[in-house]
Length: 388
Image 1: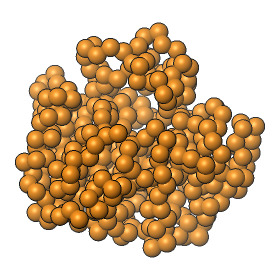
Image 2 (image 1 turned 135 degrees about the horizontal axis):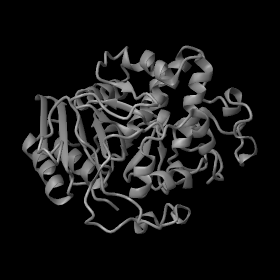
Image 3 (image 1 turned 30 degrees about the vertical axis):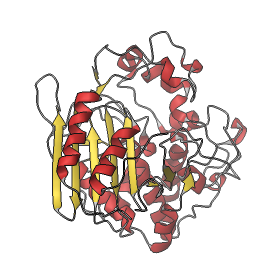
Image 4 (image 1 turned 180 degrees about the horizontal axis):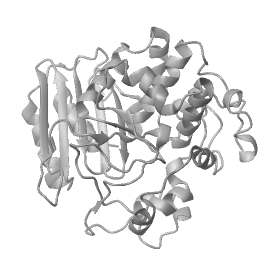
């Protein structure tokens, strides 16, 4: 079994430097809390125009890492006796799935949270692709505000991809439904419930659900840059989970500054702003069980296979969280959260006791799974993790 004592932060720094030099990431920051205390390393720039460098304490968008906030909020409501995660969706949102090809009596809250509901991959919906997937589309729609009703309609706008519980398919739409259930059960907004159940109990002073009309970030924050867009003229309806990589524009066009934009489309699927240090604290609480009662903690970390789900390799998915397969971690249990959207990518990985955690953030979206695997291998002293 691997030794969890850090092998030296110089290995982490080499990965950060390589990310900037070889992956062309504008800037990256990594924060480690472990046996040797807290360490922060950076490489590259927070602002490619001014030359300002990455630093500690930056506010960043955590993308789909916000799914863990939604799941933990739902599990807290269960612990309070307000719902059961095995409740069918129709109990709380009767008729919503109705004539869309989905069975609201068979899809449960648990299915929504572990991405086994059968809802299609929302990020591939033509409505999303037309607005954001090309440079021209993003520029025309960057300040569009999505309403909850629009998101719920989007969630079921395409047919199911499988029967409930029959497989894994990563779907933001399931989390839109979960957010709506939270609001139906409590009579409060999604943001209010996340604040009540997670942010205040953990004493997070730099973490918040981004308001629907927000288009900026508090200081300090890095500028966000994106280079991953569909070629102009590509019909979004031609994009599938199998061919999407071939549909993107040729490299060399340079990054587009995507800092100022409205991310209301993410909502309960991941519209939280935080810092790397506070996300370390969040994962420590989620991973160790210090936030939720034992029954709900166990449910959060009851994982399903992601095989065939076009998601991160070597990982199993819980309720908004993941565990790396011990076959590639030398027997060490490692838990995490992560997310990516225009101009931002974050991952946080740590041991179940909450004593050893690494968080990293890039001011561009996901480029390759090798970055998270290289950082994990360097920090936890495990063999290099190969990408199949």
